[in-house]
Image 1: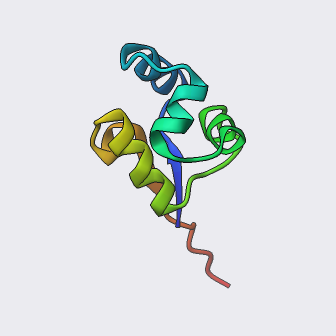
Image 2: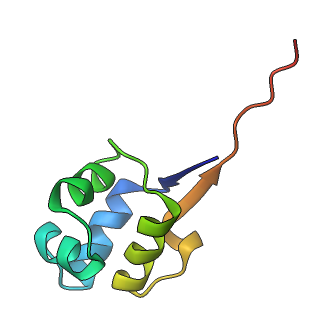
Length: 76
């Protein structure tokens, strides 16, 4: 299973509403700036631990910004 952002635009808007630049967001979530940028741009999926840090830093519920994608079942 993978965790991904539901909506990149909403995530960026949330950062602004919470008063964060991407740099200050990375610091608040205690993750690297490159990692924060990759997640914000949809180029990287967060691990469960990083997703938890992000939700805590932004003071939101997991389901507000993330979705868990289940792998497609393929029948042979």
